[in-house]
Image 1 (spheres, helix red, strand yellow):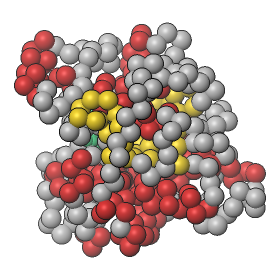
Image 2 (cartoon, helix red, strand yellow; image 1 turned 180 degrees about the horizontal axis):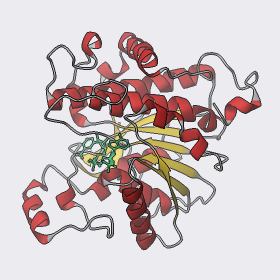
Image 3 (tube, helix red, strand yellow; image 1 turned 30 degrees about the horizontal axis):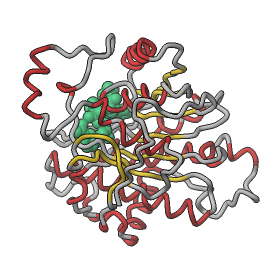
Image 4 (tube, protein in one colour; image 1 turned 90 degrees about the vertical axis):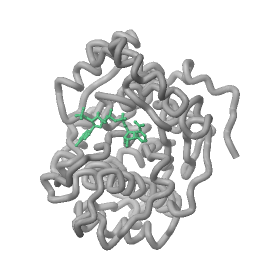
Length: 329
Ligand SMILES: NC(=O)c1ccc[n+]([C@@H]2O[C@H](COP(=O)([O-])OP(=O)(O)OC[C@H]3O[C@@H](n4cnc5c(N)ncnc54)[C@H](OP(=O)(O)O)[C@@H]3O)[C@@H](O)[C@H]2O)c1
């Protein structure tokens, strides 16, 4: 049932200066607007980005929109598991993490390539990089009351099929869009399996899904010095208005999933109008995203490929957990 809470105002979000968020890929596109909107609540927002100059342009752009915004950059390359492992050190001064937004993504590529770890680039970055990142940050999330992990999914992954025997499209099976959509399906299955495991351990952290609909740069407002839209670019994008929206609006579902006190783990948030544009509401979760056997197989394979460890989910209950494991995994 769609959530049409009229109280939710996408342009007047609940303020809370005590909160801390981390947005992967917050230096561009939808992630930039997620970071900007979260910063408008007074929260501290970390932008996880692999390029320092793009991160600093994003920070300048946010400060131009949100005076006194508290935004910081954290170096993060999701295609390199070692970079992901070093992330907790960068967050050392943050005593809490209220929301981790898994937004960064490599979109459909024409040719197959691999990460430094030898994983297919889209599966390696979008799913495996985020899988490892959540395992690194779960201790600080778990020690922050009411914290959330929000995963950016996609409509196309509703119809995808995950081939566990060929997770990385090595068998001559690479097709740019199909491999991309499979990586988004893997992320969606992981998000829901994470929610199941969190509930069974009694953790206060929740895992939610959001998707942006269809979002293109040509419909997106300028944010100098990060990006300036030309008139020609905008005019070219106008015919796509029936099926696409700006990246500013595409950020709304993830922001609501992160902030709405009535949102909860296991939900999928997306644009209300034909799943492509408009204000955020909840949607049904496709059955194939909740296939328990597929989720278990994917989890085990992701652990094998990344070396990620999950002490909190593996029975290390809050009562027995050593204090140190809550801040530095
Ligand atoms: N746009 C759509 O219509 C649409 C539809 C469905 C789902 N989505 C999902 O929404 C999310 C954002 O999409 P978008 O359209 O905003 O994409 P985008 O404009 O291409 O931005 C992608 C972001 O991911 C970052 N990124 C890529 N590889 C990275 C890596 N190895 N380490 C760290 N960051 C990395 C990029 O950083 P750099 O600047 O360094 O490249 C950039 O900040 C993605 O997860 C995408 O799958 C988008």
